[in-house]
Image (cartoon, rainbow, N blue to C red; front, top):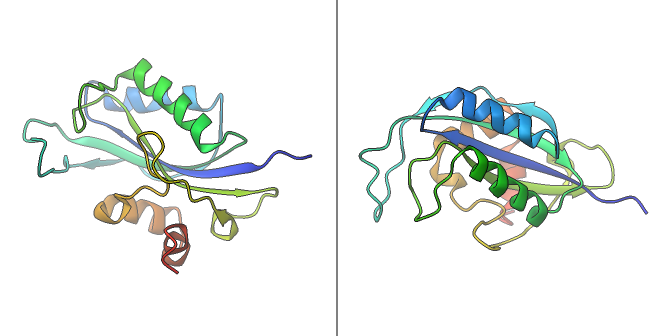
Length: 166
C-alpha cells in the first residue's frame, strides 16, 4: 500500500541574529525530511503586536513561506520542526518572544498522487499539541496571505476550503 503524501504550506520567520543564515540553515535541515516544491520571496516585516505580550522591543523579521511534500504526518513534521527550531534558537519560556527561528504549519493537504496543492484534499487537524492546522492566525497576517495567495498562487477558494468555510 502506498503511504499518503502530505503537502504543507510552512511559514518561516526569524528576528534574532543573522536572520538570513538562520533561515538558510533551517531549510538545509528541513530538506532532509521534506521536498521543497515552491518558495516565496523573503520579506522584511515589522513585528506583530499582541494584546497581552509586549513586542515593543522586537526587531524586524524576515519571513517567507514554502510549499513542501513529505510522507510525514502533521505530528511527525511538527516534532521535526520543533527540533530544528531548538537547534537554531526558539525560546519556549513563553509565547511571543523574539526568536532566531519560527516555523509554522499554515496548511496541510494529502493525496496519493502528485496533484497541485489546490486540488488536494484538506487535512483538518486542530490543536495538537500547541498548533492548529490550518493555522488560525492566517487571516490576521497580510504578509502570509500575500505570499500564499499571490506568490504561491494558491487561490482564496482553496484557503477557505482548508478552513471549512466553503
